[in-house]
Length: 72
Image (tube, rainbow, N blue to C red; front, side, top):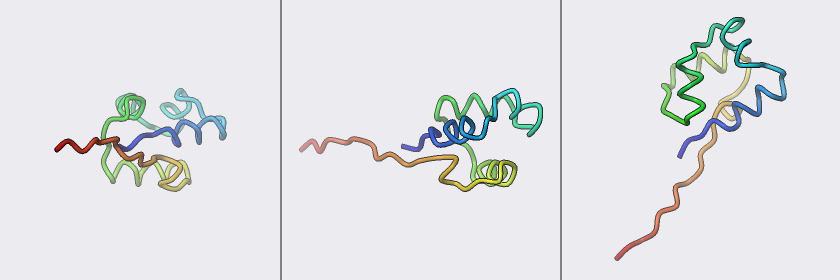
């Protein structure tokens, strides 16, 4: 599963509020909502976030393996 926990940590460590994301960086409320709920976003959007915030993909998202039980 992909989650956006690193994104929220990045924002906190750089004193960037959601208000600032929307009004200074032009990030849509819809995108912020999708990321808050760990919904899918496009690679284009990830690229735009990295360019806008001058950060790397690791600052935006993390991969956490799903826990799957093998049932025979």
